Image 1 (cartoon, rainbow, N blue to C red):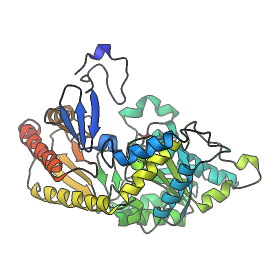
Image 2: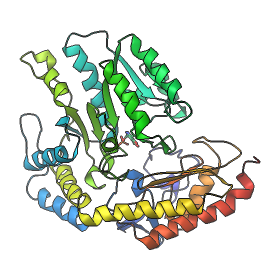
Image 3: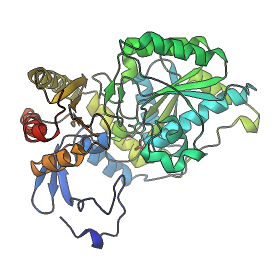
Image 4: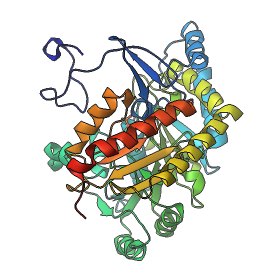
Length: 430
Ligand SMILES: Cc1ncc(COP(=O)(O)O)c(C=O)c1O
C-alpha cells in the first residue's frame, strides 16, 4: 500500500478521500495479478470485464509487438490498414447476418454514443424529423459520456449532469411477473410513432448489479419495436465475446438488432477499442452524394492498428476449441457452485448467464450500489487474495476464460467464507 497523498493520480470511480491507497500491480499472468509488495490476487472480474484470456497472454502480446514494428497508428479518414480490414471481416463472420458494416472507435461509452448518433441521424437523413425519442430499460448502464449517461439509469453517478441529459422513456426489464405490463407500457410508448431507437443490454444488465432477463422476453419486446419501425441497439459492450456462453448475447435472440456496440473483451484487455456494428439499411441512409448525410464522427485513435491486431489475435483465441471448452467448464462449475448454495439464507438470489455468476446477498439494507456491505466485502476478498468488486450487495464472478479449476474453487471458497463472516452483521431479519 502506498501513501495516497503522494499519488499524483485521480482514479476513476473512486472517492479519493476515503479510498484505500491503490494496490500497485507490477505484473500479471493468466488470472493472477502480482503486487509490488509480493501479494497475489486472482482477478475474478477480468479487470472490469476486459481480460477474457487473462493477463499478458503471449499470443496477443506477440501480435501487438509485430504490428508495432510495422505500423502503430495512421489517420483512419482517407487511409486504411490490414489489421482493421481483417478485424472487420473477422467480426462480420461471427456477428448476426443482418450486420454488414463495422464503425471503429475506442471505448464502450463511445461505441454507444456512436450508436445513438447513427440511429438519430438515420431518421434525420431520410427527412423523418418526428422520430427522435429513445427507449431504454430501467437500471441500464451504457457508459459515462453524455449520450450514454442519458440512456442509462438516473442515479448518484450522473445527478450533477441531469439537466444536461436528454429525455429518454424507460421501461422495466421484463420478467415472468411483469412481462404483460411491460409489453403494454411499450405499446403505449410506440403509439406516437416518434421513437427513433430502443437501446438495451441484452440478457445481462451489468453495472446495475448483474440483473438478468430471458431472451424470449427481450425478443418479444424487440419484435414489438420493429413492428413500429424503431431501430434496435444492442449494447454488447459487456456481454460480447463469449461472456454469456455464446459469442454474443444477441445469438440467443430471434429478432436481431440493427446496431451492436462492442468493446471491453474485444482486444482481450490489451488495448482500448470500440466497435459500432450496423446493418446495411443504416449504412445506406448515410450513403449519398449529399455531404450533409455523412456521418461526421471520428476519434484520433479510431481503428488503431495495435488495437486491431490485438483484437484479431484475441478473436482467434476465443474461437479456438480450447477456449470454447474452457467457457463450458466455467459455466458448469458456476452452475454446480450455485446449486450448492441454494439453501443459504444470506443469499437472496443467485443468478447465472454463461460465465457470469451473481450472488445477491440478503442484506437488511436491501439492494443498492451504495449498500454499506460493499466496501467490507471488497476488502475481505482482497485480504483473501481475490479481486471481486461487488455492485452493492451483488457479488459477482466474471473470470478470464483461462481461469483454472483451482482458482475458481478458491474464488468460491472466499465467497463462502464472506457469507459466513458477514451474515450475522448484515442479514435481513426476514
Ligand atoms: C453495457 C456497457 N456499455 C457501455 C459501457 C461503457 O464502456 P467503457 O467503460 O469502455 O466506456 C459499459 C461499461 O461498464 C457497459 O457495461
